[in-house]
Length: 216
Image (cartoon, rainbow, N blue to C red; front, side):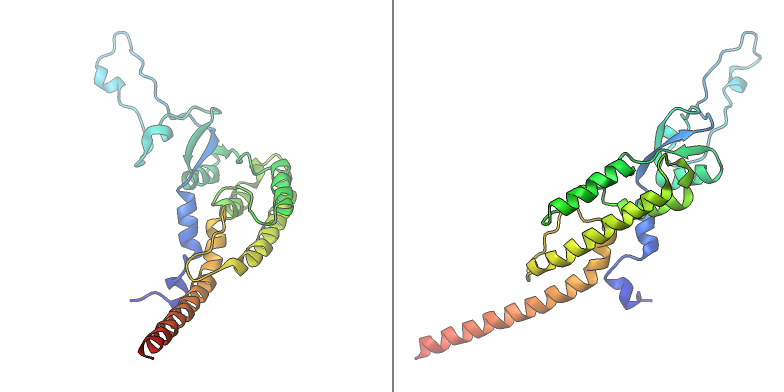
């Protein structure tokens, strides 16, 4: 069964979230999973003392070496799961503070031809953290939401202005996030296809004219 037309050119919101949730993020665990080997004098069997519980995962390196209140790095989906179970606090990224967002906003306003170098997943990451880990922020979440909205609107305007540089071969907009690209892609692909058709038709006409001149 083929995909619907609107999903053939873009990622679905669920696909984008899946990609973002596989990125690493730092947490403060509230549980300890690191098992220290302790030799017991007079133990009946060394084998019995080595039987230790472990969390089942495909990547056990960090997950099974957690110590309560010592920061560690895990994938975002796992951090959100532990957070839901009240087993960790999520450490907000350094750029996701009022101070740093204000800097990004000022940069966007100052440089009209470029974008601030915030992470490629910033929009989706903010949405997930605001929704599922709002109590882990030091700054008021409503003020963070306001800054994110301001930043998004400024960047949208700059993207629209940047489209005037679109041609039949490429469009260069550095530091655009995956969600911003996903929103633009159907429009840009369609326009570039039309520009290619016009360019090809123009080259064909030029070639025909050149051949006619030679015949004359």
